Length: 364
Image (cartoon, rainbow, N blue to C red; front, side, top):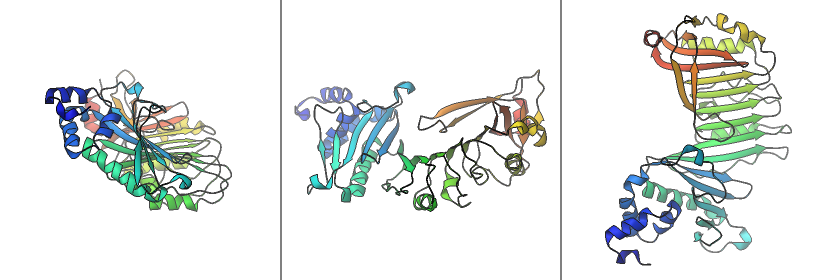
């Protein structure tokens, strides 16, 4: 079928009934056709919520998903042949590699195009594909690179993440109980851009990371230490959202966290924190008094704090959390309020963009 032979209104109708993966392939045919696709889908492309690279190091493949804001959120869980996949990039085995930089293959076996490339061309191939995304779909979309890593007894192989424009980095890491040397972990964060989200499962004792590590600069960090006593990840955090599930946590450390926020000494960017303590958590029963919390009368209804975060484990979509609490603390430097709640062995901390006076006006 030669699309250009049809009237514009017919061309437009044909393009509007094509999947994103087909539009992506078609956009490579010519510059004129690429411009036509962008023109016909200008409004449609604005509804795209995100484009995500999901890298599978074990299989040397990277699946790229496109999530449309017009679809229900519960449809966003990708599967191997999900229509949300726009393309899959596959590193070619050296024995099968040819002289090409990369090539597309489309067959009845796939609902999406597949790009095969040689290892030596990886950086160039990913940059070419990504730059085409930016041209076709625009740079106002959230582009995300998602990576899952395991540190095991045989060591930690630092992944090579392509240098792509306007891409947020998310990583899920599982630190095996047999790991001995964590220096590679520090090297990994120091050599990478600041991550948007880090999910970390710790299964053995580990040394503290450098307080200036880029690890603590991540926007959102979720750490699970159910079986071991790890370092105080909370103390040096400089991002917006943190979730810490641990076997035990020192009362003095928790008091230090709240008091440093109240004084304005630290955690200036913090919006939401959740610290769950599995054992030796009886001190939580008295912690509100010790941090000098203010109490709203039980007969009055406090406002509900709402926050969107990426702390759901291991790699789900953005979650909305609501906190309604009769207790709060105030930061000395700007009179900012944080709602505080103790429930289910957890301290939950939500920072309002409100002064105490503005906050109390919302109390019913």
